[in-house]
Amino acid sequence: MEDNRRGFASAEMLVVLLLIGILAGVGLPWYAATKENVRVARMVDDLRNLAVSEEAYFADHATYYRGVLPSTALAFQPSAGVTLTIDSAAVTGWSATASTMGTSQHCVVFYGDAAPSVPAAAETQAACTR
Image (cartoon, rainbow, N blue to C red; front, side):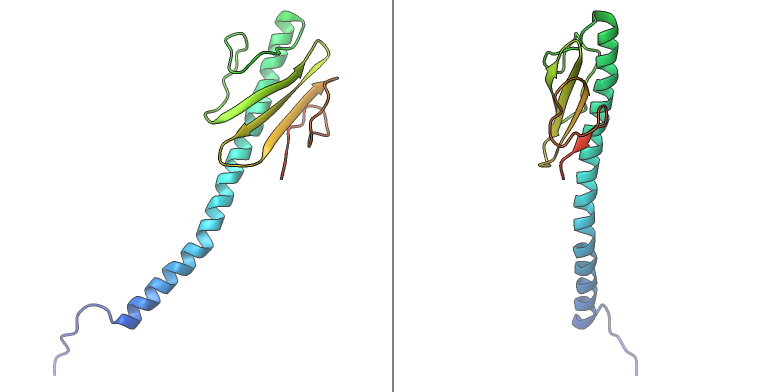
């Protein structure tokens, strides 16, 4: 007697769908955490690049740049989606904050005598909220 069965039984399909659901349940939170880490890394990188640009500006003008970003006066362009704000700037130092859409975190950095914003604790070290 020949068995002409074709396809999958309902129980087999249910097991496959259950396995796909378990994999999705494990993978989606990991993916969301990875996206968050990428956003934070982009903000930190932009703050580091801003620090280099601020030092170049200081070498040319004997003061730190204190205007809005992006600007033609400062040779620096933030990454797409990252908003940088120079909180304070003077001859003796500067501080800046970075934020981006898709996360509630923000990152800050300060240099010299500028008042550090929370969570910055060490000069020139970008720090982010968690």
